[in-house]
Image (cartoon, helix red, strand yellow):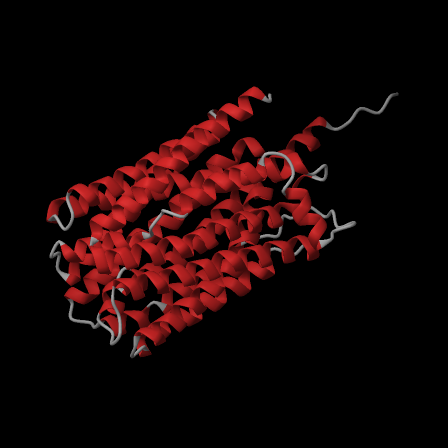
Length: 412
């Protein structure tokens, strides 16, 4: 009698694999959920806190945010390459999350803008170490067709924590705690995140290790259309200010300091609501088209700052529009990178961490320039000058992305 394959066994194994993938995405989302509660308890208060320190101002705020984020993005390249080389993602992710969650509460002892600069940079070191390996781990947990949804789910859990963090901070301020008290308390959800990562997240990396070389890996991911995509993304990032300037606009609109965290929470509510829908849409249509929508939404937020600077009600609307932009961009770009990396490499996801690293280093370098320029323009010429700068660069980037899509269509 001819032996037939056990179809039931194969089906069960496939279902177990899919179930494990979903659990891994959800577990990573929970880690980000607790980390963002911790982070946003601090970051929702940080712009106002820094501006109140000796020797500070909008230009210093831009320098701190720009340098810290650029450092984070540059380190993502290193950690992504490292995780590709040694085929260990979870341990690198653990080191990054642990370092950030231990460092953040030290804002409570900052006495000057320089102290805040050092602590903010140290926190971003942890962010930089964990991000590329975590994104690669997420990508390798699901198929290409599910990545938009997976990153959307992850962003939703992440941003739910980002909503709760500012609301907790605002509530604690209204109860009479000081900003420095809240910084110390941020350690509690940070510890929960570390425990979740240790207990629930599983390593799901492919086992291909043969022939990995640093320069060869970078050259491999830069084949094809990826450099053109990076050019457009980098151009956009040169004009993209971060959330700190949305909160600075709210402060200039005379919104009370105790309510500033609520404005930040509003950014994160919009981010959360758009994350899964934008991921699902991106899975169904060309992801680059969704990026055009994202860039247009950022352009709208800059236009609102230009037309209604320091307006009380429009400060809340700007927060919502900026949150929508942030949610689409963070979901879609992270789901987009693997396709270019896999198209450039016959080994599929072998250099996925490297691809994320290269992407982040381009964005981070541009981000440093953007926030220094925006902060300087804001301090010395006002918010309108800063907004005009961002409007100009984002408009050029939108045109660039449309041309890039046209180029891809001609070469199909």
